[in-house]
Image (tube, one colour):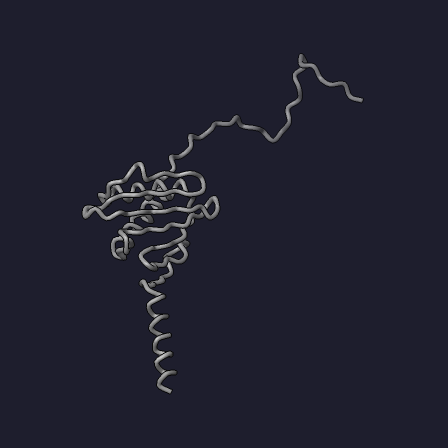
Length: 166
């Protein structure tokens, strides 16, 4: 009996330690979908293309005073990476992966073991830049003047050639 209880306690302890890391799941506002912070990474899906998300990520890093590491950052049409250092020299990495042409998976990590508060702040700043890019007003188009067309058909002038009727 004691052996069985000891085995059960060991099993529960092993399960508790193997699922380490903090798991906090919150449903994001609007079309952002699910945002999850697990084992030091914040993962989210954004309804924006990878180019737009990459630009917003770089802008967020600069706004927050993080120094972007140019040699460790880059993008193509399928994935992108923005790496930076914070004031305490912790590495900050934003990884992007294109899901579709209008959806991108965003993963943010601060430091080796993660920093949830900083990670969430970086992510929210990226979202602000994405929303601002969409909300920028588009300059109005110049009106095009078109000649007025009357509803009555005008007969051809007498000098103009006409097609013979069959």
